[in-house]
Image (cartoon, rainbow, N blue to C red; front, side):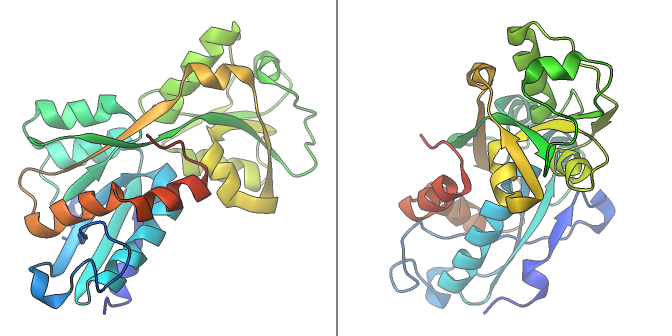
Amino acid sequence: MATTVGRVVRRLAPVTVLMTVLAGCAGQNTADDSGGPGDGIAGQVTVFAAASLTEAFTTLGEQFEQAHPGVDVVFSFGGSSALAEQITQGAPADVFASAAPRNMEQVIASGDITAGPVTFAGNRLEIAVPTGNPGSISGLADFGRPEPRIALCAEQVPCGAAADEVFAAAGVTPRPDTREPDVKAVLTKVTLGEVDAALVYRTDIRAAGDEVTGIEFPESEKAINDYPIAPVAQAPNPAAAAAFVDFVLSPQARTVFITAGFDTP
């Protein structure tokens, strides 16, 4: 069985402290069907994944460990652009799951990913406001007003790029008070009441529960992010990396993504 250490969630850990971990599974629904100690899948494996995948991938990691006793799955969650940069600088990752193709292409261009990638999910933005909506936010137009305190993702990460696309589609020039390194940091600003509104993924609002209120807007259809996944070329645990990718593409994982609010292929 996986150790407690194997389920640690790290957010943008520095390259110097990123240690190998991540495990693979062949994508079936039970431990009996998906292999075990004799299937060649063992040890620690590391998966670098977009921050918006935190809840869904944590669930999948636990399921994968149950199917493969002796495997530890450890995730490094953060902004896709920062994770891509870490991989190209030599961080020991087994799998990369990005919130947008652009950051995956960066890793492909460096030669650190040579197989795949495959799109496994999609996500769209939603307005997040604190419970009670103290800023009286009703839509994207409010992001152009000077009064509300606004948080957005940094432009170089997928949620920030998608925000720029929807603002362009709506003809709104936003006035952000802060640009954060990933979507979870943006959501934290909302849950703490430090801003009146933010743009985050629909999945993040669902994960936050009663801590925030979500407001849908039609322009979100203009910037649906595709999420690709691929094993890293120099994966320390290539067998587990390939198996974990297969598991993410399985019907079992698809159910987890749908429950979390993702679109699925």
